[in-house]
Image (tube, rainbow, N blue to C red):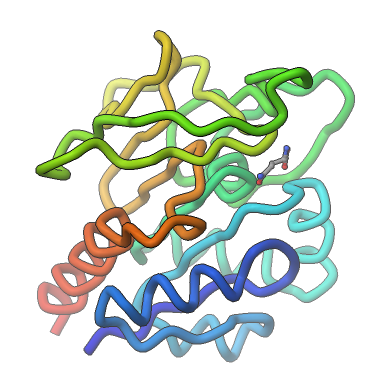
Length: 198
Ligand code: GLN
């Protein structure tokens, strides 16, 4: 059984732990570099990406996490977590550090203030059956992607789910619904990576 961590500095950690457990992973919070070293994959939750970024630096996780992402550890970022996986962020007000891993430019809070929260059905490539119920909370969108990035879903013409190699990101929060198909997809990536490495 793959061991999947949830970066537990800030954000909706608990919901991801529950969703991962339902997707047949052993789920653990990760706060320290030693804990990061012990997981086969990592989820970066939603929350506030500026705070996650600052705390990651403070907890000495920025470089170890970047190194593991570069080495191919499977990672999945939701919302603020998507922002943290972007190689570049569009936000005139902040110069925040990211972990990177996906060759994309992400616009923070892109869906706007009056729409701070909404739900929409999202069709995700690779997920069969009904569309996923996307919960968007001050959500980012992906402004542009590099050639190696696969676009998995769009909402009203904006990219909201992507994958590059072992890195997956969604603008929305599947952990807040009872539908765990996106977590199952990710746990499958972790399983595949662990099997290939052993
Ligand atoms: N707006 C937040 C940010 O920029 C993300 C919101 C979320 O994760 N729900 O980090």
